[in-house]
Amino acid sequence: MQLHFRQYSEQGPPLLILHGLFGSQSNWGWHSKQLAQHFAVYGVDLRNHGDSPHSDDMNYPAMAGDIRDLLQQLQLSPCHVIGHSMGGKVAMQLALDAGDLIRKLLVVDIAPVHYPSQAGRDSHRAIIAAMGEMNLESLKSRAEADRLLTPAIPEHATRQFVLTNLQRSEGHYAWRLNLDAIARNYDLLREAPQANAPFDKPTLFVKGAESNYITAAHQEAIQTAFPQARIKVIMQAGHWLHADKPQAFQKLALDFLQED
Image: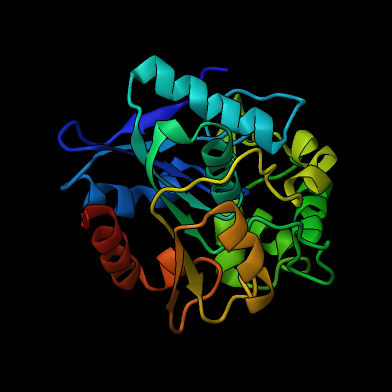
């Protein structure tokens, strides 16, 4: 699969940035531009997201394989990799499959574990259902889409994030991402990466203090798969900690990626 990517710079060690569920490389645009002052940054759209191709298959071995092929195509390995949420699991799977391709691994607010299905409003399943139930053929505006999503996604910031996937093409609106494949494969996206062999290179997990995606109960799984892992916490930040506290995240990322 030929993934879509944006190259932000050419100078410095190569650095790939992998977004989370419902995201795209553009969601990391500000961070990519900042990091491009020090690294050859590549923002990647994962399969079924952004401008990358769609596929019925969506699991972490396949998605890590996409990144492996991209690294080979661009001759970038070994490289640094940053991955957030779903993208963090893709990055972890790549590290566990082919650790020689990665210099340093930075995982943003996700652990190498199986996550139980969320419940209630604003959960991933509720978001997927609300997106799927919207009549795009009759949709007149983005404002109308925002209003229709509000009952299922009351959080304004989450709603605006989801709406980055709504585009107008040939006179009507459509979702840019492959919503059907995401819905069918959602249980696979909650699975843990397959630990074929530990990744024994520098690894940093960054957690939002107000997020429960990384907990003390995950420490053993983290250290088993990533023996050199450290965990840092950004205060007053949730799951989208890079958006909540961009400067704090930039400092942690640069300190980690630039240290000897």
